Length: 557
Image 1 (tube, one colour):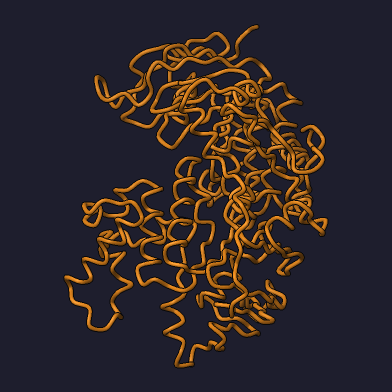
Image 2 (tube, rainbow, N blue to C red):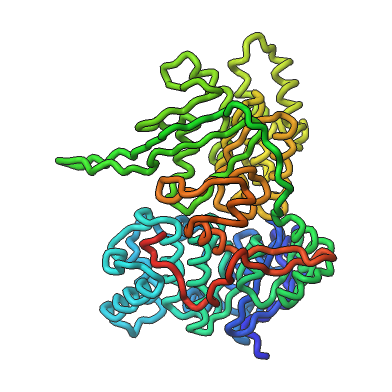
């Protein structure tokens, strides 16, 4: 087999003679092949892939090894030659399209940029026609309008489609996809991946898929490479490797995949939280002589959460699940409806409002943006104790130290700042800050979506342990159905601002009544144990058609 990419004994170090980040990595990619690279954060998988394009960030340098692309030695390629190859022969789709699309340029200009550089023989009119055709191919319902629009005007799923369009316009021989669907919900994730595979098949483009989502890698790749601490620990045919992993680290990754736990018995006590007919309208935008109409995003929501219960809210992007959580937390004011805490109606002017806010805490999706970078970890966690009467400074420090210990952090972490911690450690800090006052109710909004598979498993286990110890009720908002299946007692499914189905976890996952729920559950494959530490790919219901561009139009994203 002729190799498109041949990486042999690659090592990357921090400067000449510095610490090695990638050590002795070897792999190949054939034309048209889809190869997955998996591993924890810091395993070196992204840097090994970026080295193919010569895009490793300084001061990272190649200290050993060889990279051949289409038989050409990339080490000998000049900067001018690398610029010729990037985009034209090697394309890359990044994890977050909003940061890789230029916010100061229209979509049309960004699509035209690569064509003008690498296809100078095309006239402006021909380039525009190609851009329009590609936008239509990726499911954009109004390509003409999209050319004149800006990145911020589109959802995450549509931006990722446009990133794919800009890359595939040049028909590269290799596409490097670095966590292309991490922040997307189940339906959009499947649409984007089906689209990516369909486009690459049309042009016989090889794909190097970098991800920590093992079920997704199992679905779309032929071969898989497992990396740990900069080294390849195992590689081979995807199905065979998953069914019979030979290395302990691979088995550790598979064991970290969320699995359904035994159903718990929740006492039918008075609800901690009761929401009645909750309505929320986003106000219309003010214009020069008028104001646009308000947009209703929550339509009469009713729900209850009982003591010690975990109620999961799932749904696609734009379903209103995060808005619901923020309204219950008091971060936004509902347009209509009633929120009751322990049977008592809560209003901002009510005397019980402060008590409610102290007993209702929130863990956000991105701990880095929710933690004040100017405050130490000890100050961040201790901030919730400011309103506790009669608490001395020594008592406050003791409670902070105890809380840090409960979430698995060391005493010295109290003196550090958020930027000095890993993503998993920052999320532990966010959990500690939420629980320092021992609240009765916690809202967790996508608390593990940004974490890799093993850190996610650790944080989920920590949440379960802390809930068992402290007994708080929890509203768990997530698009990761595997995580929901592991943690939830009850599941609420939302679509277009309405609850369309709810019930116990087992009822919703095993016997969904609504077509949308079934569609959600069918969008993402699952890995089920085969014995001896192995896994096999399994669909919850009927397996969807093979990837061949059968995706939803972008108007549905």
